[in-house]
Length: 136
Image (cartoon, rainbow, N blue to C red; front, side, top):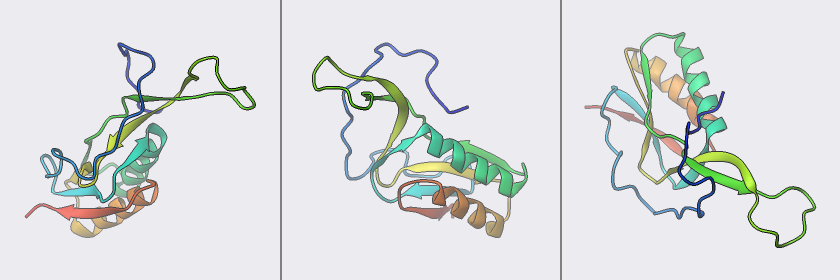
């Protein structure tokens, strides 16, 4: 089941803007290895869940995985062949706004080789360029 907020104050929001780089969330806090986003983009709840599953399956439930972003922005979409006007469309899915430099996933309790492969698999599920970050 994809990540989504349990309750939101306003059902529809304005389209979020993307900054070039992030001001926070760019350092590892929990784990030894992390997956960092290299370009600003929206990451859908489905992409996040697919990446999380890929990591979890590869490490065979060893270690610990943290998800550092949450898809809390509703994205609306109008139906096919609907004429212009008549208001904004219904909520279609939720996205997380990930600015360049943001850490998305962190992992600990596994070896470097295992973490590299797990993070490579997770990065291939996302629509942005990513890289591995290792805590010194």
